[in-house]
Structures are given as C-alpha cells and as structure tokens.
Image (cartoon, rainbow, N blue to C red; front, side, top):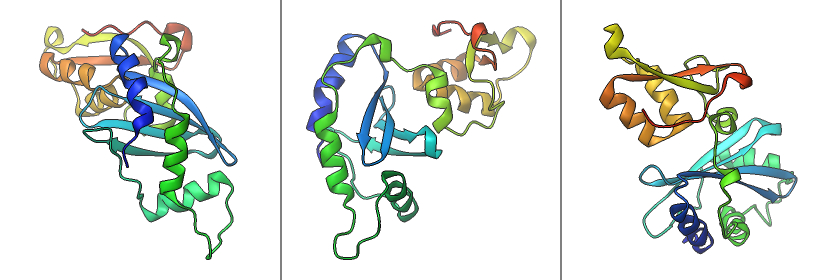
Length: 190
C-alpha cells in the first residue's frame, strides 16, 4: 500500500530538518504513539501503545510503500489493543487499518513533536541500562584507551537514530545516559 498521506509530513520534516517525529493516532480503543523515522533507509514507522506495553514497526519503502500484512502474534495483539472481538465472518483487516491510518497522518510537522529519547524508550528494548533514557552527553573512548561497546552503539541507534549511531561507531564515542530527567541535555552530534 502506498501511504500518500505521509508525503506532506515527510516534506515538512525535511524542510524543518526533523529526522524523527511523533504523533498520536486513535483507532478502536487504542491511542497510538506513532513515530516516523526518516534517518534510516528504509524509513520506519513505529506504532506503540504505552497502556498495553505493545509496539510494532513497519518499513516505509521507496515511494512511501508499506506491507500491510503483519505477523500472526502482532495481528492478535493489535486486535486485542483495539478492543476487537473475533468474528470469523468479518475478520479484522490490517489493510483497512492502515488505509484509515493513512487518512489521519498530520500534514505538517511541528518542532515541538520532534522525538526525544525518552519518547521512544517505552517501545524499544534497550539492553544497556534500560532505566537510563535521558541523554546527558558523549564520551570519547579514544581519550581513555577504550572501545565503544556494541550495546551502547545499539542503544544510541534505537534512541538517537542512525546518524548518531554512525558518528559514534566511526569516532569511538559512547552516548551517556541518566535515569534523572533533570540531568538531560539537548542532543547535538559529536
């Protein structure tokens, strides 16, 4: 399916230099946090429902095309969070779900909805210090004679994006995190 509705948002994000954007989408009994990441290839949509501890991802391919079929476990969980009862005569259609979603995508990005690491953290499993989701700086491992850890690189990729991940990998830099919101600083690439 082509997501025509996401093209204006994409253009608005590009104009404002926003790589990661979050917006709400309501369907059935669920309110989704939807994240649109354009800092990787292919682009990515992440749908999450905090109240249900549920999330799933979709790749957005060239031409803003998505695959509307999802795996069976995700399908069952999605039906549950939407509050749907099984009806063998009228099964839930993910194609219809994404068609409706396509019509509800915001047309413009607002810089106040640019994504922060703590917005994504509830939906991304992070092995390294999962409770520490507030970015507090960078550590140049070359100065200490150490090497950036793979777990830190993966956390950087998931919470800060592809550009930060690549920069850290190339320059042997670790992202630093805290569990205290008041310690957070604005992210600028190292």
